Figure 1 (cartoon, rainbow, N blue to C red):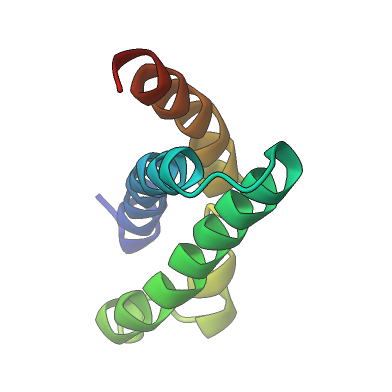
Figure 2: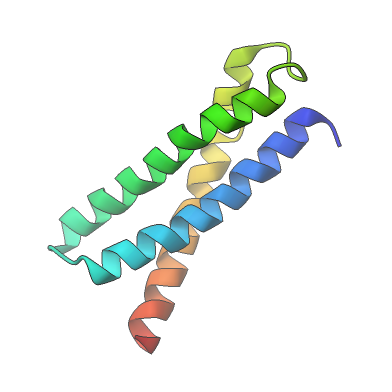
Length: 96
């Protein structure tokens, strides 16, 4: 697997993890519906930005353009985060 493909799948996996973390926070820190959604999106955004630094350290020698490390799979990350956020929130709401 090329480094860009590895980075892509790492970001997709982080989107799933961010969906679970966001769902737990939205469920156990409920303020109101809109505020919980905004806070959940903020958590997902923070996880994406914080993951940039370790990934940059790992892939800086393997990927030529440094901007590609930040931009690779940004849409995939958020498109993975959203359905898994809804899925985990629904599951936690039913079983909690």
